[in-house]
Length: 505
Image (cartoon, rainbow, N blue to C red):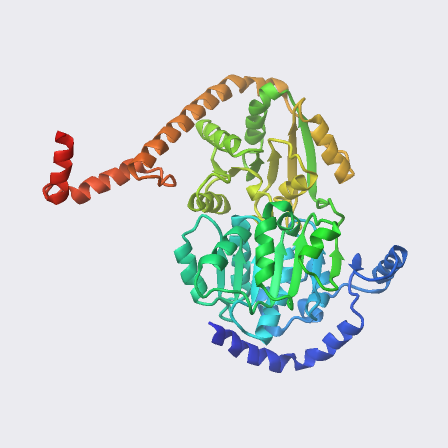
């Protein structure tokens, strides 16, 4: 696998000799795009003047080749349909391609994955080795998506990528790590498990550390895991932090051990894209579900993501929608990894048009055909709202976001509007038509609750039969297979004799 990259690297190094002049020029004058902030000793006013001067005098490069990307990766971009760099790519690549640490802030759906994947792959082509880069993400689904992007960009160079996340067998992952992949995409917790328990695995030769959705990873949720990872990787490395809502707290950024980073901002801290239409729907809590059904019926031709606050609400809503004949799948943290990927793949392939999920799906997931986002529960954090509605109106497309606000959510909703700096318009809804759905919706909710109860009882029975294997709900099939397997065997023998004596006593 490494040899494949080395072969391509030899060709690229020959073709890239002409690019060295560009790199020297970039080092000498590394200002290529507006809204660039660099960590320096200049005053705030001087930095603003520099940014304004850059905006007035310099033009955005119109191709990846002009940014300094080698021919191999330019061809890969062309295969993926990436004809021109996005704002964040055009702003960050001149810095990252010459070896600078990066802090990137851009709207969701703006091409952040390409902004960090391309410089990593170019560096790998120049210096091929195993365990070259580590990409940390806060969620499993985002990890798989980033890995797919790397595999697509590196399909022509024999790139090896391993995904290390929870919910998957560690032994299988250890076999993948033993193949010495070039790129590791991981969630912090499971990576620490392998660093502590997988024999022969270490990251002492790591060259690049990338944190996608960095504000979440730098938060206290992953504090212990991140500290362990940072202790076992080299201090001499390149570090990239990317997010749509980056933290500005210096203490948190210092934990990532950045060295003279270039700070690239192509959006403000809380920004949604221009082509996203945002509305709110003020409703009584009592009739929240009928209003949701009305919205889903009204937009029956669209693919929709419904965000909820809790796993239980997501599951109940998904089953309720199924009872009403709507094609819905759930996605939440209590599901096994296999079922989470199954739900996501059904939604991606348009086999199901409604995804009911928690914030586990709010960050980074790139599903281009999402037409609409419904916030069934108002997010408690403004940045969570930005990430949720960022699942639609991606890559220049239009989209619609509707937030359902009850009498108990007004304060939270106003806080979201305050951070966004804009007032949303009210969504026009026919109340009489909604009330016609109330009775049937309540019946569906009751049926869904009964279904959940039966599922939980079935799960408990399965736990007793299989001594705690709670991830598999198909207990009856397992029992039939077990009976079939032992059906032809004699029930006699030393073990059976002891059991009979015990029963007799």
